[in-house]
Image: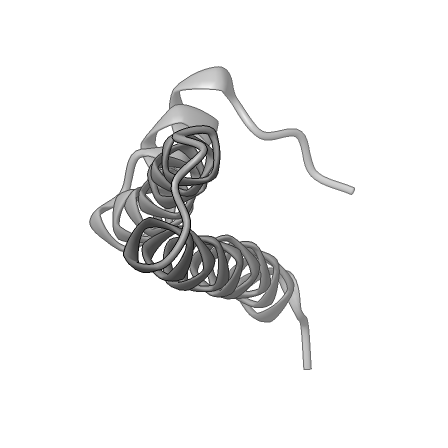
Length: 80
């Protein structure tokens, strides 16, 4: 396995495509935080609905971001 320099690794990790995927994951974590605040408000009705929607959207964003990052890493390291 060839060695990869730290500069190449950082350049790859901060490429535009990877930064977009990182933003999706961070956005999902933010939605988890919003859901936590909505559920912690002890309110019923609309706040519970907002919390449930934010939690589901956050989960989907985090899951999609992690799958996207994993797919990108595996696809670009694949040798045919």
